[in-house]
Length: 97
Image 1: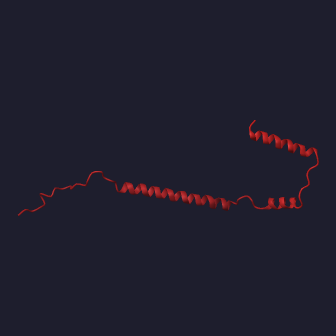
Image 2: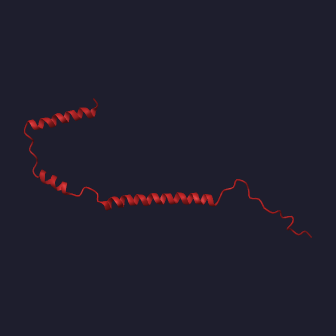
Image 3: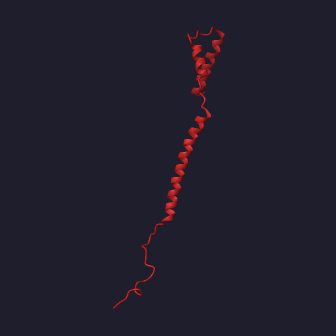
């Protein structure tokens, strides 16, 4: 058995032994504290969930916009490996005296 199984068996035996004998005395005010904590709103409301997910959606959409803008910029201005050349020769245009 691994460590978890040993601890689980030990705790199960202790819990089983509690019902045979007398239960230990609870501290003063323990039940009131348990009831007070159970009435607290621990579950997230729908507004909290949507605000967290909405913020993540905005961040993801901003990243996607930045990536697509970068890709559009690289496609708009293609880089050339060779030097640009003159399309029309200048010897017919120049006038020699």
